[in-house]
Structure formats: structure tokens, C-alpha cells
Length: 295
Image 1 (cartoon, rainbow, N blue to C red):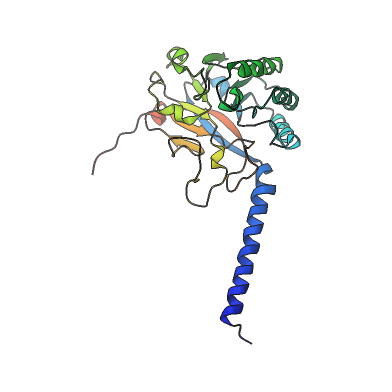
Image 2: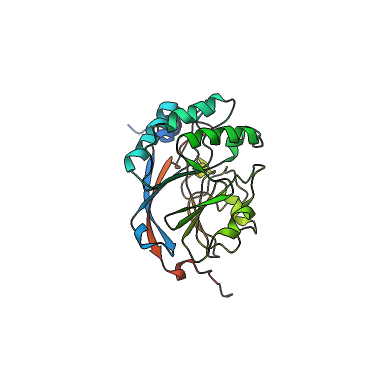
């Protein structure tokens, strides 16, 4: 017996409600803790031969604190440890600060992180400076705990890891953002990587002609991303800066990690991410600024 138009509309409405409920349940209960391990090459100009094939693991935006489930974030850190990386880079927002209990939680969670073969490096994110993003004393106390764990926090400074320069820029929204303190010292004839939490900093004229990769976080990939379009809400001015590889067309490239934690427990089409880079030599021409001819 054929159904009436009214019956059809009722059934369609019921299916829509059920589908919407399932999507909400997925975005709340499943995807926020469904970690994706992204594996990709990271070609670097002037990379020492000894580094070819070595691994650099990037994680970002742990947001350890009252909102992120500690068992989940500890499990994610254990996944990082299992990779046995040569270098670990943590690109900011270790915590969502309310009081110093979050600093203690960072030390507790990252106590599960297996030391990297060569170096474990971190930079500060905006939430590491408290809810106002302005408290240097909070970031200083966090850095002291990270140092106790063997994590070298770069605050507008650089280290040399067996011939690979790694520069770390303090957070863009913090009182300590000062790339001009470090970038002029990055030698252009040697391999280099820059760590910078907020990718909007890439648009400022402060990079001293640097050509190479900038590893960033901050965006969480938008957390909720409709298929085929950019996320509607993203905490950056330049809306190109969502996630993954982005060419700046001047010899620099961004890689924006989607992060592990969250400010609100919801993700859709933007799974939490651990990025495993395999370092490889790059041809200078791969980073050459691109030119465009007018039509």
C-alpha cells in the first residue's frame, strides 16, 4: 500500500532527527578521542646526511586541565612514546590554565612521555599564559616543570641538534612574542625548522628572509569542519590557516597540526593528530618563491 505524503514527511523527519542525533553523539563521544597518526615526509634544505630518514614527531594543543579527560591525553602521550622518535616537538598550549593544579597535571601526564633519542622541544601557546594570555609568571612556572621533565622550551631562542637548527618563537598573543630576538641568528646555509604556535605570526615581516618549514598548532583544525569547505569558526585572522601543509609562496611552508586536546569536547571532520615526519633532504628549488604571470 503506497504511503501518503504526510506519512512520508513524518518518516523523513524521524530519519533526520535520528541522523542528527547520531552525528552529535559521534562528534561528542568518538571523534574528540579518535587520534589520527599522520605520517609524511618533511624535506629540508641543507639537511645533514645523518638526519635523512630520522623522525620528528609533532604534537600540539594538549590543553591538559579541567575539560580534557586525563586518561585520554595520557593514552595519546603513550602513543607518542611508542613511536620512539628522534625529535619530539610540542607546539604550545600544554594546558588550559585555571590555577596551578593544571601545571601539576601537565607534569603528571608528560611523565608518561618517553625521552626522544636526540631532543624533546617545546614552545609556549596562548593558554600557557593563563586565561588572559598575559601572565608571564604562569608560563615561567610551567616552563620550570617542563625543564624537570627534560623538555627544552624555546622562548625566542634556538638550539642546534647535531647540525639541525630548531628555532622556537614564544606565543603570538603573549607579552613574550619576539621573533626578532632569534630569527636573524638562523643561518640560511644550514638546515632549520621554526616552531611557532599561532600561524598568524607567519604574516608579519619578522622572519629575516627565512625559507623553510614552520610547524604550528593553535587552530585545532577548526574542531568542527563541514565536508569540502573550511571550518566556520577558527581562531586565526588568516582563514587559509586551518590545518595541514600550506605554502606561503615565498620559500616558507606551514604545517599546522590539529592538536590533541580541546577547549570544548566536540570534533567533527577534524580528528586529533599526532604527526610523524620523516626528515629528508630537499632541493633548494623546492622552496624557491613562486612567481605568477598575469593573464
